Image (cartoon, rainbow, N blue to C red; front, side):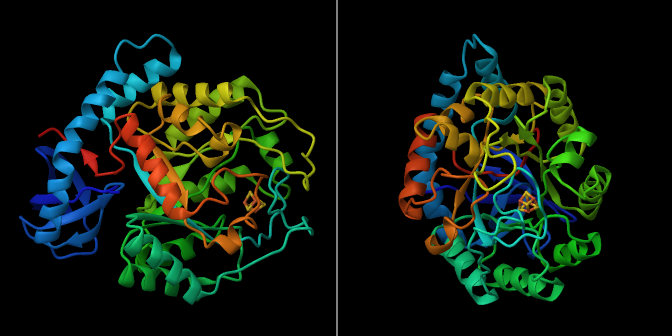
Length: 396
Ligand code: SF4
């Protein structure tokens, strides 16, 4: 099982390195290593995240070489002669971005949340949920398994909005993970102060996942009582200015959302300097005020992915677990063939996974992580995707 390709550094200008992957050149930002031409690295999301020894890189590249070109051919074949909206989106993705697919690990370290979003099972008012917090050592150990044992090169650290993790704790977590198990670290910790995010960037975090949820201000205020959409958007813009890779998006099918809202959601995501679109279907949770509201159909969700791909051809688009939950057999594959090119695998220790109960019956919750990785990689190979995210494309 391999899901990252080491690249050879061929040129360095300030902190931007040009990396060669089987003749294809990509650029990545290097904030962490002293590099020379000829070194080998792993890049994720346009950042250099690990250095790898020349010998190890050459061995891995040997196993990749034949497979890499075979996968490209399969992807190209599946993207030819598109007939409908989703196939057109898949063809756009293939032309613009080739066959690379980001595979991120996600570690859900706390299900405490101070907020009361109407659509979320972690809402503060849900007193029936057993709450957990992983301590710092536990988080660092779980991240180490994900990065060094399971070989993830990007890791999302996710929690409810939980101020128990103050600046000191979060900085320690990031510094220790960066030192022991280097990867692209992406924060999904909610609306915390911009100054805190700045410190966490300095500590080594490089991605921020913060959805704006809906572009409709009235709907936002209804769904997130006590919150102001402008503050959230201001924070996303601020995070972009700090230098974070931005992952944001919205919910599809919130009660009261219109088709016009949905198009505006897609447009707004594109206007925020977004590196990765993250949007998925609303799934009602029985312990929330929206328990009786219906989910959107998988078709609506796939069409939203396809429209987004056509409107923002060069974006990374996440196929969310919520989409997979709507169709556990085939949702992920369909999402990837409708314009999606990114996914996440849950690496949270099993004893906590069910408790991160944002909506019921999440896909993959009970899966053994290793088996889940193997089945995802198998799926990606079957549709010609290289499970890797190797940096920003440039003309060679
Ligand atoms: S959506 Fe996020 S902020 Fe809102 S209740 Fe759930 S975890 Fe908390």
